[in-house]
Length: 284
Image (cartoon, rainbow, N blue to C red; front, side, top):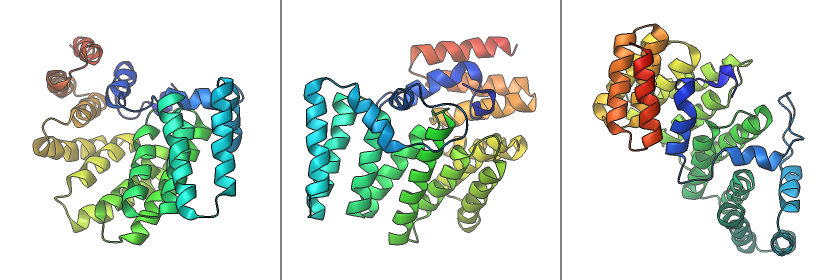
């Protein structure tokens, strides 16, 4: 993982942290395997259809036939409900059988766009956003962020008063931005600030602003916001780890040890707990 992508928690903890939080979903690393060796770190457009074709070619013959049949059903389907069901079938296949995240997310998103309900659009948008943090391939990361933005925007069009959707949209800019495009991070922060200024008690907005502050290097404000979130949600392991990271980046080792310690108290994953303990020892 590249240095510029270590934006949330320290290098030794990040991989285990993502594994812990994303363990019930398909690991983000699957995104890389779908793209194949042809995906380079250079800036280029991610071709989702080419990626799915490449992933399908690696399946056993029987599964290839199944996927081909479902894809043809989508093309032939002249009823929207039929297309939605087929997309959902494809999403389940790539999730449960093939264990490949990118095709799963793509078909989930396509089904949500056709269904066009706030619930389905929000689910698909959050799915992409939550897994976006674990992706370090620029092309795939850009594609996932773009899909998540589109889905959040469609959901907001259905319910303009939903502040959580607006915070989610702003978060896609924060987590989808490349190191070469910091203005995208600030754009996301500004969008979330609109919610926070209107409702200072919105914990989700404060949490995302805290993350955005760490990403953009505004550590003083970031830890201030995250401490408030930690008071409201003391068991949020992600917040505790980010607080520790923020203080570590500020050079305040004592406070970093304090928050890493609290994180260790709430970490159930043995490997994550061990990494946190080692990090605390390094900060002595």
